[in-house]
Length: 358
Length: 84
Image (cartoon, rainbow over all chains, first blue to last red; front, side, top):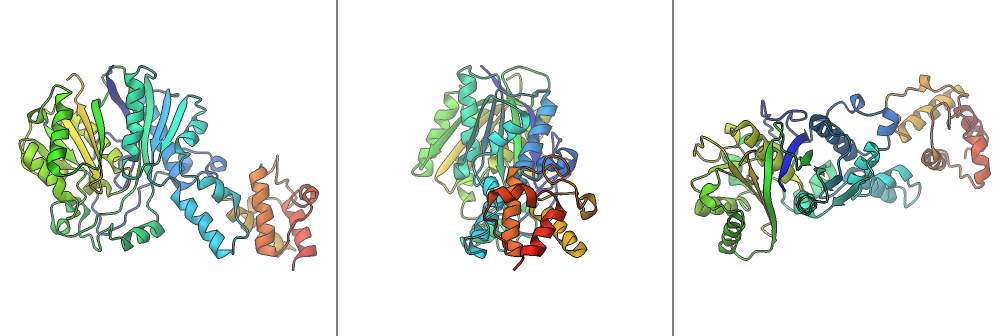
């Protein structure tokens, strides 16, 4: 069974909602950037909206846009990944406990603070009674959700699925992670964060996003790309072992590294974590176009969902935006793209995509 | 009393996250639950917390709720009589 990306809804720090490619990349010169939000009132009833935390509004709207593009009202599965879930309302609830000396706790913030209810809230909104699940697995949350869908498709249990990655980066959480040196002190130009002077410093640009994909096993002219295979790895000792794993992954798909036209990686401009991408590229994919996506979306737990949007967009449009290129290798026809991300050099994900028809 | 009603309306809008609703949209005598604003049981809990937090009034008897929360005016009347 083949798995295709049929439609996408993408709310990010770029102007991406309802668009299949990036028309004009927006540059930021600050280390923390929030999403460009749509006017939620034009999608949601105000009385319904007041019981939705910000991340749920984003998730529901990106799902609506995605399903509308795909022409499907009820997917056979709704599967989401989120690093932190509804952290904004969790913060409000916990802050109220402290500020009010454990009194006057507001039930709405408590209800909305649950981290693992994104898929179920989308399902309630859509009145969809099929399977739903939300994975909260830090840096591989989205990939775990995608893996769940992948297995369901491959075992012929579903024919359509809505798969998403959703995370918000609140000011408070940004500050907490800043203390752990997750973020850059200064960002001069987010678009060149992986190549310019910003790439010489530690830390990343903090971003956020809500990205949904409608997956289908049906061939269709409107499909963006085919997801051929995916794999997650944990705690691989040394880059040589990782290179070996990647080669084995490609081989099981009857490919080798020379077949990969585009090597799209999770470079975040962090001089401490990007060298692994450079090394894998140099040793295994030097002939491929080397590209990044986190210079567009920033770093967050489910940023690989934006990577999958970028990969699907590249394969559908047959071209790589110049702002994402990390080398000068030109490809006349893009057939196979390998999306690679690592989280803290402990969790690794590989997603192999092909243009439709290959 | 009018000042208290206006303040109460603003507090209700704020605590219940009634986006796009202004104090003028809420009639003093309009029912808060069912018709009118169409609030539900979770809103009732929010209003109980509001009464205690903002006005120092703790509702001990749940049976009183229906009467107190009938409208903004009835809430204001109760607050006026019991505020600390």
